[in-house]
Length: 621
Image (cartoon, rainbow, N blue to C red):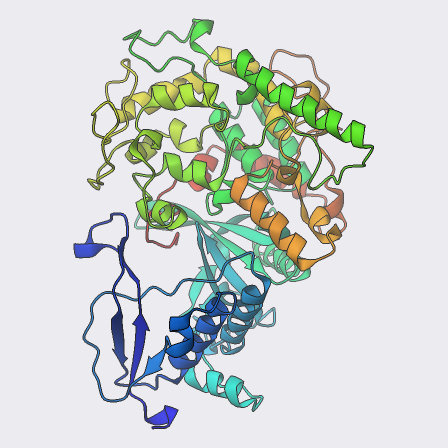
């Protein structure tokens, strides 16, 4: 029969993967058995599915070595006379990221999906709304997920319509007829009156994203959340940032702040030094200013280990005893002198090898380094958040939980590993200092995480003896972060992560030098010649850790130090200043009032809450 007459599609596979059997989150089950999966279309044509399956099948099979079986029998077939009778969903293996041919095919499919959707203006809330932008190709970024669609800004709201490929769009693609007759799904809407701040963000290593922070009051209760959007170009992002700022500022006495602007960081430093910001809020601000976001696992906010006592040796936590604190003046890799000597030997060996060969190293690939692993990466974030984001961990780990002894089962063992394991330098995440996020320490889902070699079962995280509960532990950990001892030494850690000892020769002298790929940015990416090199660099950086943007060009002052304002302390953003983003003279005043306000939008509420941001299987809005 012709394609138009087909009502059922059959996908035959020699292996399938079953997820969430009986709706239980568990490792995927791999079934090595030839099975036919039949899909019957009752109200629509299967034409789009057939074409997309063929494209994906071609992409996957293009690099396989042919076998006798594959040459003698087809792997994909269609049938018109059978009904869907299987419940297990088929899993189509996606192309390898490193295979350029596959990538090109998948990129074409992605472009087709985008081109097949036009913005439906019936999504507008009001009939009199005026579009301020053309339809912009965009995507919503959430942990490990990306939803493509279209964005349009009106004088009332920002709309995002997810892309849905129609059968007619696929027909036009296959028949090369040119026109597109497609429509998108129901739009998400963010009203301009709810926008309280913006922050420029990265899409991988490309500087073309924006995070929009919103605050809304309903029924006497306020809610805070944000959305991360990525665009096709920096120019499109900048135009939208400018228009949103202009639109929101027109009805307010002061313009909305941008967390990544230099003036905003200067205001935050001044307020922290004058005790108007606590340490937790200040670290959240610095993380946001340095490009970190709760929506991006490769750039998740990073917080320090503050305490060094997590065992059973004490039932009381004495925050006046300096021995209970970690040395914040050194990175995790240098806290154990014996382990650091091993890192140093490797670094010296790399330098000696380059000197003896007389070769000039390529900065992006061959420069000597001390640490081949990083303090913050997607795997580390999900290591901590396993109990609240198990499906994300399964996705990242190819459908498996790690072996029990490598899971996050104990605070003491995790800290000891970060001090002694050559492949473990991870710092903490904000959840360790937020009492409302205690759920990540509790196995409330009843996940079957296995047994340790000692025989113990991995369940709730084993906490220090001085903690009566998960909430009590976070409360005491937060008290340690806000303690006088931590406040005194915190500027040194800030310098290591966001300041003058985070890069270059100062990083080397302070034992803080990571793999050169960790320092890549948009300019470095553009300098790479081939798309293959760019793809490889971006994959390595986003998977294995990215150093936050450098914010400070001088040593961070302490609260007891004499200082003469923040002039010259914060790094000028030469790249983003070149975008000619429009500001006015009141922007610095607005940002300082925004950071220091006790009412209204709170950094702790708007940036530190995982609710709706990292909860498994949900959108953050």
